[in-house]
Length: 124
Image (tube, rainbow, N blue to C red; front, side, top):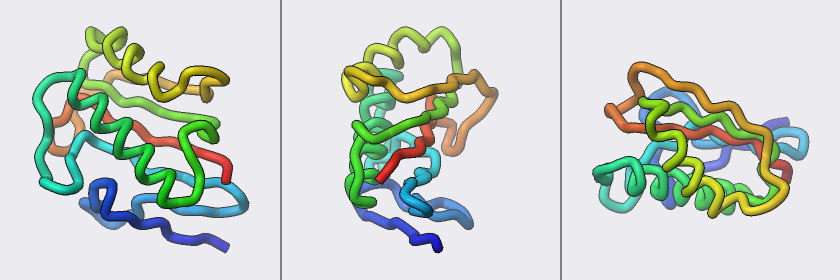
């Protein structure tokens, strides 16, 4: 069985997908981009965008009844590998110990031309 997770504290889906799905004790969170869910605005700069992505993910996981501490895997998509160290600095504030497994890849373009996107898998 699967359960659709939805919250107004993270950006609404902009396509035919769910914000997250809970199945078999796991939460599969769709990619979060740096859209402020209250205003629809995208902050300028990699630091502000990374903070917004992490906040969106935190809010989505909390809506699913779990937390950042229970994340077991993330995938981070970034527009430029030049931002890798900056993103790592912000990422490490949200994952201080027992960090999840992670992939990080540079890609040519992201939705709404943002600078990064992150998806996650967490245990419930």
